[in-house]
Each structure stands twice: as C-alpha cells, then as structure tokens.
Amino acid sequence: MNKFCMAVSALAVSVSATFASASDGCDSGEIVAKLSHVTGGTTHPKVVAANKFAERINKELDGKMCVEVYPNSTLFGDSKELEALLLGDVQILAPSLAKFGSYTPKYGVFDLPFIFKDMDQAIRFTKTKDGQQLLHEMEDVGFVGLGYWMSGMKYFSANKPLLVPNDANGLKFRVQTSDVAKAMIAAMGASPQPMAFSEVYGALQTGVVDGQENTWSNIYTKKFFEVQDSITETNHQLLAYLFMTSTEFLDSLDKDTRAKFLQIADEVTQQANLDVKSAEATNRENILKAGGKINVLTDAQRQQWVDAMKPVWKKFEKDIGKNLINAAAGA
Image (cartoon, rainbow, N blue to C red):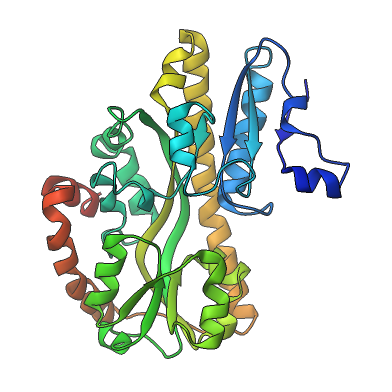
C-alpha cells in the first residue's frame, strides 16, 4: 500500500502526472477514511497535522484502515463539508471552531475575546473535564470531536497603531462570520466586515477595510504586515479547529481499531499543538525581520482591552454557560 496518499483535484492531476488519485492508495478490504480540509500549501499547521495523522494511520493500521487526505477544498468546501460528514461522503474534518454556532453555542467559549492569555492557557483548558466534554457536545447531531488543533492566538493589525480599544474607534475590521467576533469589533467602536480569507490582503491594500485579526503565521505568510501600519500583540482570541469525525463512522470501527484510531488522533493532536507554538514564535520574528512593526502592550493597556470586552462575555453568557466561561478563564 502507498503509505501516504494525498488526494488532489482532477485539475491538478491533469497539470502534473506526479500526483496520484485518491483511489490508488488504499488496498482492497481496508476501511477508507476520507479526510477533507480547506487549507492549501505544505506548512500550515492544519496541513501538517492532517498529513501526519494519515501517515500514522496508514502505517500503524496497515491492512485495516487507510486515510486519504483531500486538501485545499478539492473534495468539499467550507459550506458543504459538515453536511458531507453526516451523509458519509467524508469521514474526517478539521473545520474552524467558529463554524458550529448553528449546532451548539458552547464552542463560542473559544471565540470570547481575552478569555485566554496565551495558547498555553487554551491548551490547558482543552485538557480539562469541561474541554474534553465539549468534544462530545454534538453527538446528538452525529458529530464527535477527536481533538483541538491549534493554529495560534490572534492579533489585531490596522492602518494605525492600536494600543487601547478606543484607538480602533470608527475603523473597519475584517472578521470571520462569527457573532462573537462581530460583537468584539463593535465593543471597540469599530465596524465588523465579514469577508473571505482570500480577499483580506486586497481589502487591506485598497482600504476596503482598515484592519484585521489573525495569527502570526497567517499575518506573515499572507503578508498582511506589508499593508498595515503595525500589529498589536493582543493575544485576544484563539484560532483553532475541531478535529472531528462522525459518530456513525466511529461506532462502525471494531474495538481494537477504534482504540488505535483514537490513540493516534490524540498523539498527533498533542504534537501538532506543540509544533504550532514554535512556528508561531518563528513567524513573529520573521515579521520583524521583514520590517513589520509589533506593538507590545503594557499590563495596564491590556487590562483596558479586557475591561472593554467583558460586556461581550456577558452577552453570550446565557448561551455558552457561565460555568464553562469561568472554567476556560481560570484554566
């Protein structure tokens, strides 16, 4: 068996004969699990984790299970992948935690601004009883979490320095389609502008939006720092993905295969999150080396941001749950 099979679109196959189709990699009789995600390239944390997971499954469960990876929306895009999981057209996904608002409001705890001081605190929370219970929050729908794949903390950038929340007053910020994110921007006196990730650089460059929020890796690799005055090291929000499968697929596995599948999922998740910390630190330095400017907040300035965002916590407290918010904040 080809120990690692990477699926590509028909267009990519026509361009380069070095790629093989997904169906060529798995042996007859093996359980085929399709892992679909929307990220391209080779270095993004999600890409690295997905490929490592497939590599380990295909080696350690050789003859029993084979994982095929479909990157860069070559199988399903953002809008179709969750439906495809329920239909059994794909077995494993890693969508943003911000995508589950229509299924459960509780994942909104990860979106709350300034609930985590840094990624270490976020990782600690995912390992608590509350964090682990959230993996099973959508089992009644047919989804089950395997782990949380971190991509880093988020930082604000803008066409002017942002040292306190009032500095953002009147500006337009690109955000994901998250109610919490929209409320966060509004709390700064700014205007939230939901927009596809692929459109952000052009929107910043032309002034369609004045600022954005993202991880060091995304800010560096997408060159957002080139079209912004500076970035503020706010650590205000977590960017993470839910590594997940369907309850139907998980329940279909025999006891030993299921145990090994879950073990590999957990080990890959833990290592991936450690690797992200290192990659984020490297890309922070890369931004500085490339001439980008980073504003470091004093304790007093950061407290102003925290205080400004507490009403956002209160707004979503009933839906998310006060105890869950307190658990995350105290992790």
